[in-house]
Image (cartoon, each protein chain N blue to C red):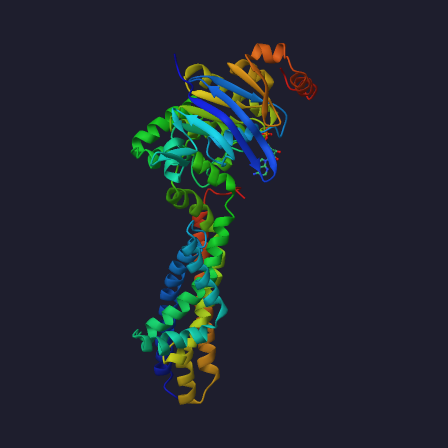
Length: 261
Length: 218
Ligand SMILES: Nc1ncnc2c1ncn2[C@@H]1O[C@H](COP(=O)(O)OP(=O)(O)O)[C@@H](O)[C@H]1O
Ligand SMILES: [Mg+2]
């Protein structure tokens, strides 16, 4: 019996008086590919940002790789995690952002090698060899010496994926990684992610409006509304036979908006 | 007719003092600016406070008063500085207080996206500042740093108050000895202007080198 790699238990998150996540609980198994879907503002991004420690939480517990993410033990009692603990936990997790967030002052290669050299103390030669493999995997080996400003959106996002992979996290978070791209550039990024999903045993959490892709990519789909899970299940069930009306309405709207399911 | 080569020599010696004050003052100003500018963004409140006090104090009092303190008052507290050291200190700390706000503003103008990317890549605070934030903030600081350095150059003239023989001081000597006002003051006018040109030209050069490849970022 395997244990979950992520355990979210009664998670609350408020921004001021706005309650964004409300007693949210779910587990993710190692290697599982999860798609998070739902209307805009339902809290999907917030979940990923909380897992990446880019937010604080208002209540509840999260366990990642068997350890508490936002709490730690001190003298037998549980206290909020300090920066050192968060640093320790972040090694397990990587994230790809909607707007790529590449470092504009560094070449493509340096974007990918920076973190392994700094956080793992990898020698330059080793980090570069690995970076070239990753860039090759995302089809951008020939752009290693380019600056990010010379790349298209799709290329930037593929570099961002390579950069996150370079740290070899066990969990990868993807937040609407194609929604800032021109339509004709979406496919090249999705292709890379499909390969990634097929070839690695990484755990992946994907927030997306690309329902067709979510269908193909995910082992399990979670439909969110107002900070709660309304419905979850295998993609076939969620996309073909959604039980809840809110899920049905959401999917209808998405189809009407021209997204493939 | 006076011996102009001797007087010219005097003014050039003054120019050397002015250049020294400007260079060393700028170095001190730069160090103070980064200490206080980063200090204002520190996670520790005491450091934020100290930085704010320094900045507000040196911006809120005049360079004359600061210079008098450095040279005439500090000795009573057991700190005796040479005129040159007192001049560098007053100029450097004064201009550093202004430049600290430039450092802080430039750092704050780096988008939050960049901070978040470094968190996702698990960099430490120091690594983030050193490798991601400062390299992007520095090019934004340079133009204003150039202005600050020119301000400092112009402010060096106050040091004649503590008997430093800078360029302005020497021009006055020459004027007193020759009775000629136009020539010495025309001379230092040109010299000040030339020094200011050197500063802005080297800043532009530096800026161009630093932003190479950064085209189209902002
Ligand atoms: N930093 C913030 N401050 C205030 N409100 C926020 C902040 N981030 C997100 N929110 C709000 O939280 C809600 C959920 O946002 P988000 O997680 O981005 O939703 P989704 O990704 O599902 O569209 C939204 O109402 C959004 O306006
Ligand atoms: Mg979102």
